[in-house]
Length: 403
Image 1 (cartoon, one colour):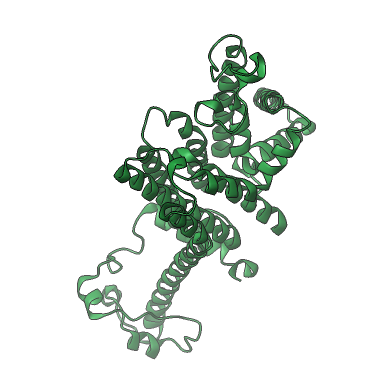
Image 2: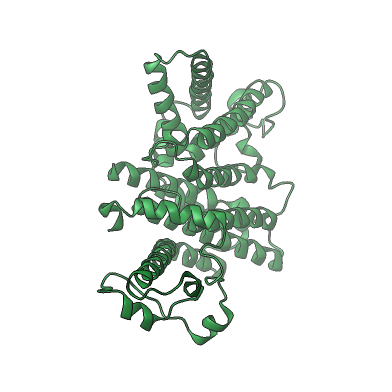
């Protein structure tokens, strides 16, 4: 199970790094070539293209997506009729979803819309050249290319909608989810799926909007994902939350770096990253940003761990205050009206028999006077905070989850 979790995290990580570091986002071709080699899925696809043409893979993936969607609709119809004896259909559904969405979503979506890839990239041979020979240029919406382009685009839209629906309503199919009915976990995964879709789709809008606009959208969407992940801590296993947090912070860092690079392009008036020399300052900055990705990953893991420790401290404080109030009633007979005030540390230590495992955090005079977090007024900042604390308290019982 741990190996499967690490495999999913690694696949997501390398594919998104490749998709984020492309020229439409302000990265130079030299940087893009390195990240393409890091993505071993892309390397395997390139090797397979020697035997099977690139656009044949588009047809294969379209057929697989159609099979998954048809099987999904068939299952919905049978379950609605009360027939639950479709074991092989459920297994096929799980395998197709696991393979196409959690494992290879950016690569699959990119290969499906390959017929229009020539609109922003001239690295691969265009569909027009494949059908009409050299000199045909890039005309994916001309005849006969349109006979391939339109079905591919429609299939891509349906595939994204199918992935969003299953992520939102059937998150237990995701191998990262180890509990049935993990709808809380799907909230963050769904937002991350939106980000992946934007990463793959925005290069096709680059002829119409500036790279800065693309990078702002990516940075804001990734920041929203990071905020929700730290607020919800959606996964049941702490190790998955840690790895996911590292991945999210790495993508946030790359999005921020791309925003800086596109801003430098605007300042210098050079919109084509290929015009920058490979040994210049611009390229050196890109190597520095890529080199800091492990640091960003570690920062994400540290933030996730700090968020969980903060929830643990809050739960310990609430538990300690509850126990202290009960002991005050039992041993000192104080009336209930006097127990609404916040207890001092000295009072807690004098009442509790042996508070060895209770961490009592001291508050500064500023915090005591202003109570900036309203901890004296309410225990939780929001309903989401209360729900997160309840789930963390439930998962805390698992000793292996606390390591």
